[in-house]
Length: 257
Image (cartoon, rainbow, N blue to C red; front, side):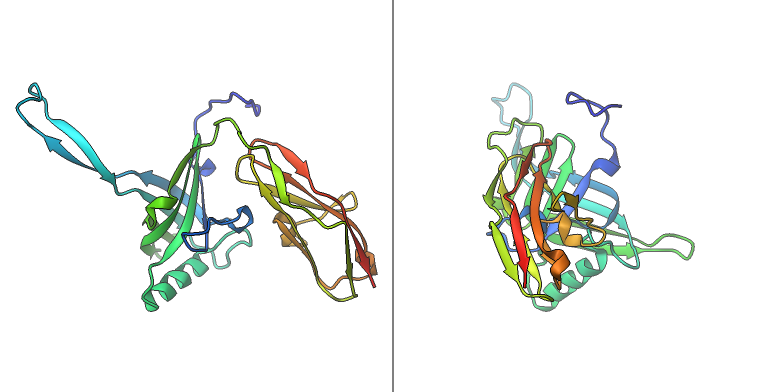
C-alpha cells in the first residue's frame, strides 16, 4: 500500500514502538534522549480501571458503575541479545539500572513512551515486573511491566491531531567554530513544535554524515572527534518530525588550526 495520508490499514505489532529515557519526573526528556527499550516481540497497555457500584433503589432496577481511578499498566516482552544495538537502551543496562535502584532503596522509575497507532502514551513510570526465561533450544526472552510513577506526567496524545505549533529551532548552530587539530568539536540543536518523534540528519557541506560511521549524526548533538584539516568546512542539520515537516539549521563553518 502506498504511503497515503488517509491510510487506514490495520495496525500490526511491529509498528508499536516502546521507548524509554532516563531522568526524573520533573523534566520531560529531550527527543534525542529517547531510545527503544530492546528487541520487542509484544507490547500492550491496560487501563485497569477500578470501579464501585451503586444498587440504590432509585436506579430504576439497574446497577450503576462509577470509575474511581485507573491502575494504568504498560507491558513489554522481548528477546535477549548478547550485545544491544547502539540505538537501543538495552536489556543489560535496564537490568543493571533496576538492580542498582533497588540496592540504593530508590524507586526504579523511568520515562516510557509508546507509539500505538492513532495515540501515544507518555509518562514517568515505575518498573514493577522484570523476569526472563529461556529453554535449552529456545531464544532467551524477557518481560517487564511499567505502572504509573508520577500521575502528573501521564499523557495520552492523538498522533493524528492537527499540529498547532510549527516545527522550529529553539537553539540553532553558530555561524563559525574554531578548533585545534585532534580536539573534539560539538554542534547541537534543540527543536520544538511539530510532532514527535524527530529525526536528525547532519551534513558536511552537501554530503550526508553516515550514522554507521558516526552514530551521533542521528541525534540532536553531532560530535566530530579528533578533527583534522580535512574536517574543516561547513556543517548543517536537517530535522524532520513525524508528519514529514522539515527544517534546516543555519550553516556552521569549522576552521581547524
